[in-house]
Image (cartoon, rainbow, N blue to C red; front, top):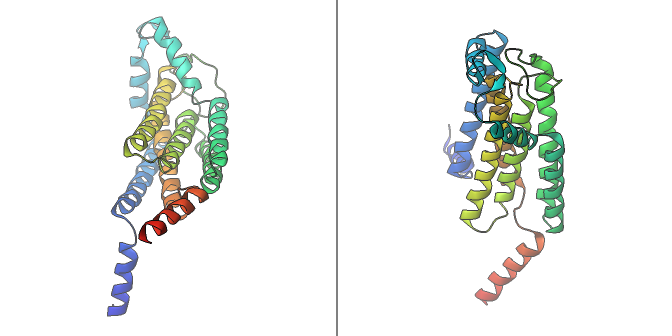
Length: 248
């Protein structure tokens, strides 16, 4: 490698922040984990693990009754609805409208397209793997589509993590950015766990949904960080004018 080529390579490498490089490595690792998990599921190697967890969440001798008090089952039913199409659609539309009104047009359009394509990716994965729903325990809610990956887990991760990551870029303070991201992760986790508790998904379905959804959100964050401005046009102009006035 010539001196010019070496300098060009170093310039390209240092153009990316260390956090961006770490995130790219995380994407590569996540893709490997998702591929391995899908392979194990197709080969039937995860069934014993899935069966053990699903049975552990039901009363012995009464598989139609989950462990825990009655209010917990009701609460889990409410939580799982947060990952439904209706709630996620409303959430996405409201956030997109908010960003449009706040004159953050690029992020608004990117949020909507990221979530919609993530939902499409979830549907395609389900069709490709074609894993039927578990019949180990009775389902506590009605389901009809395929099982792997969990649509609730993946789509909620896609939606809440993508919204969290992109909205965090619009926040001024580090504390609010951390809170927004934590809220997205928390919602994705409890929604996925609710699907296992209700008996409508194998645990590996949910793990795969989390992994795929997190990868999608992370990829969207990397693209937005590279190409999408976080400030509204007016705010950027005012910031530029402020800098100019100070230097004068």
